[in-house]
Length: 208
Image (tube, rainbow, N blue to C red; front, side, top):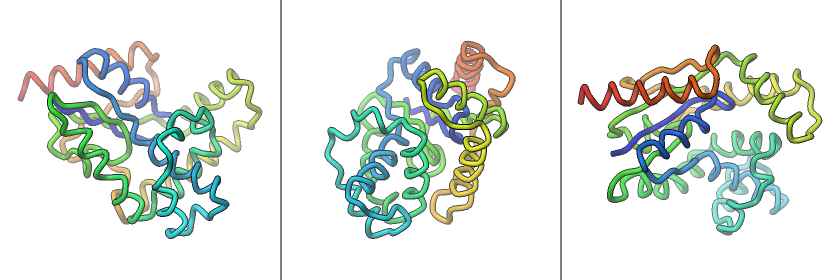
């Protein structure tokens, strides 16, 4: 069984995806982490994330980079959004994701183009979203909890900029697959969002 979970940053898709993977006993891949690793490696190489050559060179990052805690920072998240617009970068990372999705027994992947590009044959596809202001409030609270200082206004501007890049890119833009199940987490608690996601997937599997 393959489950695809897509959506914009801070929508709750990562938390939902991990919970679904645990619920169904599926291997889990946060594909956004791969793009964060590329963005991080560009920085280490003193490169330009907007330069496709520098970004492609960074795709050959050491596996140890995936364990670096700084990959979760807002700064690296912004770099990931910038390198992900390059078709060459997406092509370099796609095979790893496709192979993971189609391993024996299936898998669960979350990202921006899982249901549309990586696993269009997924048994269930979720598109998780929420209003940009709500997502910025969540991210701001998360950063305060980690002791990171960044204004709400800056976070909101960054989220809107990421949305614009992700939705507007020519190659594999962020959008729901035609058969994706939409889940707006704006008014939901974490537990409520997870239960709603399980219910949607269960209904889809039952119909199938």
